[in-house]
Amino acid sequence: MDESRPARVGIREVAARAGVSTATVSLALNGTGRISDLTRARVRRAAEELGYRPAPGAAALRSGKSGLVAIVDRVPHHSTWRWTDLEFTVRLTHAICGAVWARGLYPVLLPADAIDFPLAGLPVDGAVVIDPVPSDPLLTGLERSGVPTVTMGRDLDHPTRTVWADNDKYEQCRIVLNLFAETGARRPLLLVASSGQSYMHDNAVAFRELTGGRGTVLEVPPSISAEECRRLVRLGVHIAGCNRRRLHSGRGLGAAHCAGDRGAWSSHPARDPSGHVER
Image 1 (cartoon, rainbow, N blue to C red):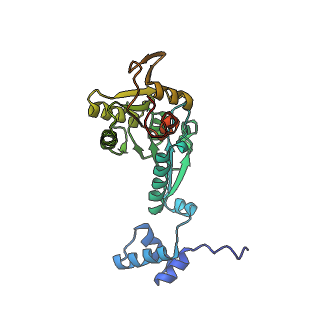
Image 2: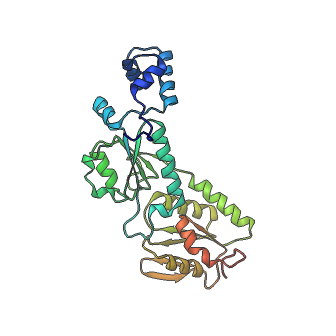
Image 3: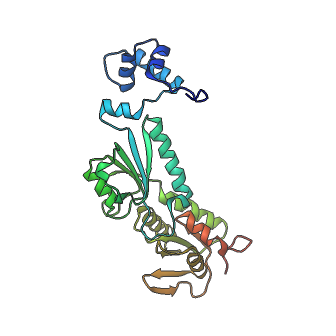
């Protein structure tokens, strides 16, 4: 035995610390049985002090549940970015993992193309899907498998299909535009991807309403390269299918707001050392 490795805390250690039987510990931690609230609280406090967590396999045998929660960040096919390229999604995923863990459950990260896996065979009790794509087949598969699902953002084709959460795109856009106004920028541009995801759509809706037609929405395909993205921000050109047209008749942009930080990175070199977009 590796003596340098600390022994795993078990139910017996929790029982000894709380001064109760192992059966009482099991009832207290599972929220079952006729035991007093005081005893239940004492057991849970002892478990927390010792850092006890039930073994997933044993818990699954007792309850029929795995305690596993799948987390999937959806990325459109043929896109030039991965979810790890976006600081927001990395932070969000970390926060979700922490929230799942704090509830005594076990977060499991699945790849963005998780639809290729046999969902019916996944031993998960729930799922969090970040930025679903339109008519998302992953959500359909989870529904058919009976897996409770929460989404960050909406499936725009089926906005009420799941419980969902999101941040306030309107307020975010208002803050950015106020900042632009303070720096003297009068012709703002919004860079979004034509991915059909709600966070891109909601940013565009808020931007158009708040700018009252003064701003330009630059919609690019998810497959665009960083170099092409940089060039388009410089020129102020809008892609609509295969048609391209100059939006400002040669006039430069006042400021650019990128819905994804990958777009901000790729367009940053379009700025001169003073921080203004090249004119």
